[in-house]
Length: 256
Ligand SMILES: NC(=O)c1ccc[n+]([C@@H]2O[C@H](COP(=O)([O-])OP(=O)(O)OC[C@H]3O[C@@H](n4cnc5c(N)ncnc54)[C@H](OP(=O)(O)O)[C@@H]3O)[C@@H](O)[C@H]2O)c1
Image (cartoon, rainbow, N blue to C red; front, side):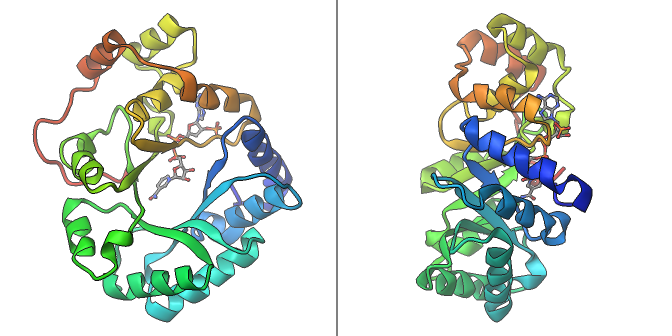
């Protein structure tokens, strides 16, 4: 989204339809469409009362003490909002974490962000972050998580749960690649739902993960929203585990 002026209106309409369907957490980033996606979100939310939760992300090269404050202010202008609900470091770059955390602290004090977090952080990165004075204020870690990429089940997810850190699952549909898997199709058939509903429901199966599927098509929103009320049975989970086994050892955090 936000990559072409020609589709901007249709994309804003889809974001509004998503909110109407109950999908009220919106994930964006300064990187997406180089600001274009934030502008689409700004269009979608303009003049609309009602509660949404907006997540945006700062580029690692903009994550320095002063740079992150300036980047956030640019994002706020594009989003046309007074604050961002959750502001994430998109991935770890060369800026020291302490500088980014100092900027996030300042943005929080100024009321420009309500919470801050990180993305694409593995256990060792989190441990380094948690060792910083305000590191434990980190509210969320957004990472790749879907049936076909479940390395975080081994250690990152249990560690995050133990520390009370929210995990956000990105690419929960496996970017569409897991939707024709026979086990996913069979579980969808059992519940008379679409494979996309099963894929998202699996990521949120124990209530501790926030899932952020993407579609630019309003006709696909209902299938994504339905995941919130699909309860997978023990039998469903066993079938999915057989097709997509639990990791038995540590894998470096995947990003695609
Ligand atoms: N923090 C990070 O580093 C990071 C990295 C990647 C993504 N993300 C976030 O996570 C979000 C989702 O991830 P993603 O876009 O990579 O992957 P995804 O949500 O797993 O998959 C999106 C793809 O699935 C298709 N799709 C959606 N609903 C479908 C349905 N019902 N049936 C069949 N196909 C369907 C979409 O096509 P259509 O649009 O044509 O429906 C799109 O091609 C992104 O939008 C972004 O906000 C974050």
